[in-house]
Each structure stands twice: as C-alpha cells, then as structure tokens.
Length: 310
Ligand code: UD2
Image (cartoon, rainbow, N blue to C red):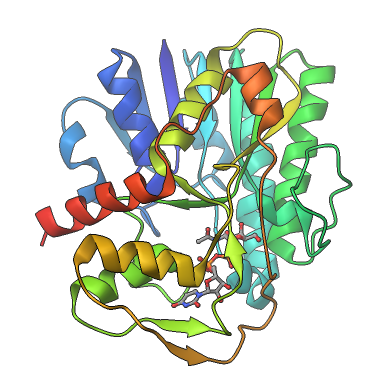
C-alpha cells in the first residue's frame, strides 16, 4: 500500500514510517520539521519520499495525498502547557490541520485515516481506568483539539465513507523522544539525566502514576488500526494497561543503569493530573492489540539506543 505519514519525521511518526518501509510499503513522510528531525529518518534515506510542508497548507496536503491508501496523522503541536500559552496556534495546527487532512483524504479517496489522539481528552476526572465510553472532559486547549479531531474523524466515517480510526495515546516513550524541550516526556528527561550522571527532579512526591507505553506497541496499534476491517469510526485507548509511579520508574531505571537515582523534589507542576491508566480491553478485543513490550523492557531498549547514539 501507499501511506502518507504526517509528522513522519517526529518521534512516533518516524517509527511508523520505519515499520511501513520494513513491511514493503511505499511511504510519504509529510513534516514541517518544526519538531521533527532529519536524523529521525536516517535509516530511511532514499526509501521514503520526504515532503517538507505544514498540515496548515491544505493544497500541498491535497497534492501529496494523491494515490495514497492510508494516512497516519501524527503531526501536531503535542504539548499541553504550550497549548495553554498559545491556543490559537495549536488550534490552527491541531484542529484546522486535522480538518485539512480529512478534506484531502476525502478528495483523494483515501481508504483509511488513523489519527493520533490523546489521553488528554479524559481531563481530570479521577475515575480509573479510563474507558473509551467515558464522557470526554478535556481541561486544556490541547485536549479540546484532540477530541475535536476525533469527532471530525467519526463524522467523516459516517458522512463521506472515508474509514477512520482514532488512537488515544497514553504516555508514549522510546527512542527519538527529544529530552531537551521543556515539554519533554518524563522518561526521556530521566533517562538523559541518569546517563549524564545528574540527579532527576521529581515534581511533587513522586507518587503520581502514568500508563507508560513503549513506542513499538504504539506502532503496532497503528498498523492494526490501518488494516483491521469493521472498525471505522471507532476510538481506542493505546497504553500498557498498567500504572507506574515516578518513584517506581526511577527504581527500574536505577537497576538498569546500575546507579542510585534518588531524586530531588520540586513543587507539583501546575495542571498535572495525579494518576492515569488506560483500559485497553477494547483495543485488545477489536484490534488484537497487545502491548508486548512492557515498561521495563521498553526502558532497556531506550537506554540501549541512547547509549549507542552518544
Ligand atoms: C502526557 C502527555 C501529554 C498529554 C497528557 C494528557 C507525554 C510526554 N505527554 O502528559 O501530551 O497527552 O499526558 O494527560 O506523554 N515530571 C517530573 N519531572 C520531570 C518531568 C516530568 O516529575 O523532569 C512529572 C510531571 O510533573 C508529571 C509526570 O512526570 O507528573 C509525567 O509528565 P509528562 O510531561 O511526561 O507527561 P504528562 O502525563 O503530563
């Protein structure tokens, strides 16, 4: 098949592109390189078509989608705090950009669009685990943008016969997640600190928990979402179905790197939720998804990767 991956030079998008190429598919990487990086495509040189363009550029998207069977829409401004500071910009990229993808998909008769949604749609409702049937209650522009994208997808499936699947990612981690941004995921920050001999900083007492999911599992969910029949218009949680506190995470990391990683503590980060956990039974039942790489194994792979690229 021919696939277009928006955000294909980014953290998750580049892993999807890599897997598609490995399976013999034709791939167009569509990325404006605002957070995506050329290095993320190092293994794909000459194997993919790279388009340096923005999802806000509707004519360009339309043009590049010609002949594509599937679109993986990973491009987004992915930071919750950034969306709070810059709601207009994140609206333009995350909502208008998604609408542009869907318009182009309809025009080009793309068979299926798979969308990178987020656990941010659940907001701060303390009920755990999160199930797809719960009412979305986002508490940030980012969460509003992601649930809006998802609703557009559902509408497209009903109105225009473009098949769509939305994947609500929990805390994804793995190689190529940039540790240098102020919005970096906690695992990328902790791993980079651990390997540089620095002390990690925990915001709060470290008892907060997240459903950390290794990027390889997320790629697997994407491929299944693209190819499983009879799931159009649906949304699925993509996590590990297991909760890890930050202190447990540091314990695992310490064992792997062979160092004591007792952290320093700072104030609780504004807007943080306490706990997060996905119910992944729907994805298991309908997509055959299974998070085969657990958190600890994922950490090992990430550390191996970071060490090998230093
Ligand atoms: C995740 C997603 C975000 C959105 C949100 C929805 C990532 C990177 N972000 O945000 O896109 O979907 O979930 O709820 O997956 N922390 C520290 N020390 C550090 C960095 C972070 O203690 O140096 C804490 C932080 O305060 C938080 C936890 O680690 O309690 C996880 O933070 P995060 O930024 O990795 O992810 P999260 O859950 O805020």
